[in-house]
Length: 173
Image 1 (spheres, helix red, strand yellow):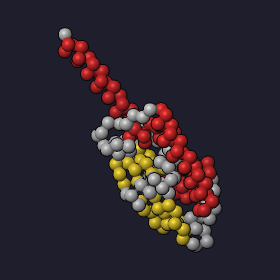
Image 2 (cartoon, one colour; image 1 turned 120 degrees about the vertical axis):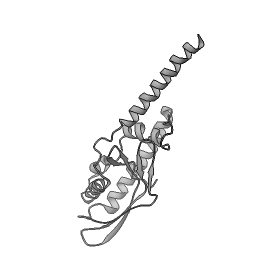
Image 3 (cartoon, one colour; image 1 turned 90 degrees about the vertical axis):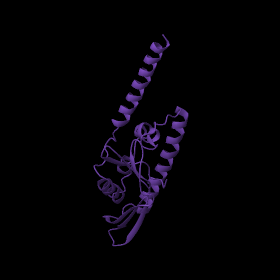
Image 4 (cartoon, one colour; image 1 turned 120 degrees about the horizontal axis):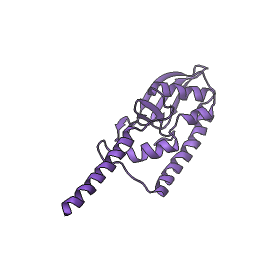
């Protein structure tokens, strides 16, 4: 009798785990670039045009951050993290606010100097695989502006999910 009650409970737990895993594997980045190079070109174009809206569109949305980044920032094969709503609200709020300020900094210090020619791309903290995504951490670009001067642009990390790329944030995480 106990075995009969336990088996459905285990089956239900397995079903829930399978649905969570399926949800994670189905995750997509809306309007993500097809490569990190394409994302970086969009980034430079947005800066050259001082286009705040275009720059902001290159970053993960609140939904993407909450459904992919927060729960999936665990080693591959580890269970996804679950956060209380107030904790997730806090993490998103801090990251989003800091990114918005850094976007303005980027526009003010690197914007409108184009057309920019990309000279060098490096990631200070390299590449790291997580359960739900791959991160390319702490982007550094060396670009030549329209006047022929080299400029060093340092910004946050890029996320790759299912062959699509976006910035997680623009802050130097």
